[in-house]
Amino acid sequence: MIKLEEYLRLCDEESLIKDRSYKKVEEPKISIITPVLNKRNTIKRYLKSIQNQNFQNLEIIFIDDKSDDDSIKIIEGLQKEDERIILIKNKKRKGTLISRKLGVYKSKGEYLLFVDPDDIISENIINYTYKLAKKFDFDFIRYNIYIGDFQLNLADIVCKIQNKLLYKPNIFLYLFYGFGRLLQLDYYITNKLIKKKLFIKALNSIDKFYLEQFMVDCEDGLVNFMIYKLSKSMYFTRKIGYYYIITKKSITNDETGDFKNRLKSNFLYFNFIFKTTKNNNIEKEIANNIFYEVYIRRPEIIINLLKNLSDDHEFYLKTINLFLNNDFIPLSSKTILQEMREAIKPSAII
Image (cartoon, rainbow, N blue to C red; front, side, top):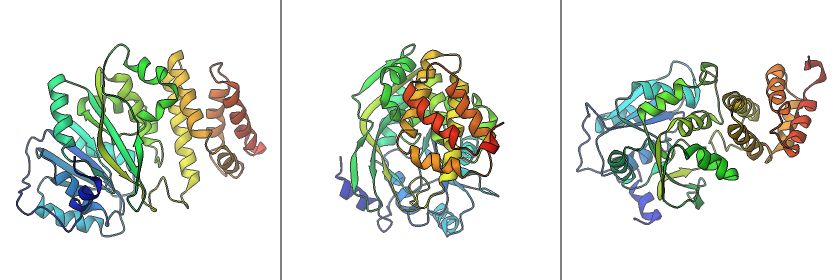
């Protein structure tokens, strides 16, 4: 494997391959789905990591979510160089989840990859996962992620796990209930090669109410939960497949980010998880673990936001009460939930 520093250099926008032709593929094997919002500085590096792949039988679908920088102009210029690129332009901002959904329904590939425009994928990861998926007919293959900061200083590997082949009927129980606090293994959508049929099945199993919300956080979790639940077979590999580059302007990492929108997104996610798992005790335990893992980190910020809410009181109260009124919630979580409920303005409580 090429050293990271060398690989990043190869993905530099100044070192585009000159001796390779990127012609349109009529029946692509893989569709890469990439929502874009103001990523003019990273799109070329992102594309280079795809063009460097040994596997070329693919299409690259950009969904521009009303960028107000030069992102569209850059993508249109790249289309002249790489005919596999398809550009969809949202007429109004729809958010990542809805944009991905639009890209999936536009796609022609048998398998899907979701790559964000400020990240890169590792060398030969597409060829490796595609051959493995086809040979054993896996519903999806999950690989590891490197996470780094805006200076590309990479941290420890996320989601450490040994290569393991898993089959139903024990997948759901083994992954979620057995691993307990390792639920973060399953949050990302960008670390998987997924059968398109499975992804669409997962989308169709989610109430339209959630799919139509403008979520800025937890949008991966909605679909991921159903992908794990509905899959028949999967493969986990320790191979590094994705480099997640955290930037100062990242929606989920911006120091001045809109925490109110993030709070609403998180509550939508927990509302979805609870209603999806209400008849299954194992899945209820999963719902609690997910809740605890997210909210235990920043309860003071959340409680302060709830104190100053001017709308959506009823939604927040209903979601909190869904959890409080069930026996599977432990005392530690109930204490946080009760503080959240009390933080909402008394006049909002009906």
